[in-house]
Image (cartoon, rainbow, N blue to C red; front, side):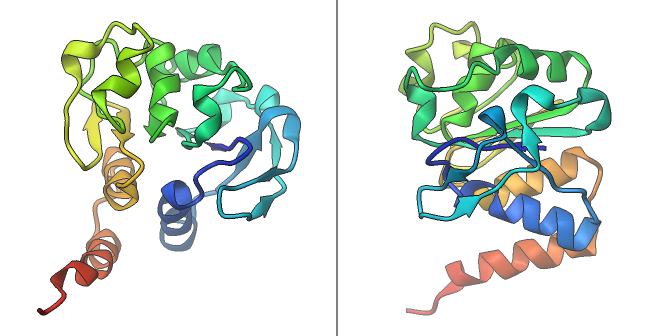
Length: 186
């Protein structure tokens, strides 16, 4: 299940949902506040499967909080109880970009190594896990919690799949395909 909000950063969750659906036959589903249609930062209009309020955690293995500008405003939906409950039920909980702020506010990052867009981004929240913050440009998995800066959708996808136990040739091919652009000859 991927949580989306108005002006969500669509590139951040595109790879995990595409790879999950295309290679691993995930039932990719999207939820928004009130089940409302939302528009991404690039202008893509999304009609969700359900409302955040209707999420049934017993039906899930994975809960992803997509980043977006709303998470730093008072218009952000309060999903801290949902995220905390997902963590308590031992689901894989993942946040990217400002979606990591929700994990911090939920207490999920209090005792696990994690990252975000910056330490300052999370420190404004007065959360309990500041000592576990890692200043790295890639996703981090610690137990069943995955975090990433908004610039790391490839490693975010990989860490989620690895945490779910899906390390296979499909993942190796997918990672090699996305890494190829960085081998540009001068």
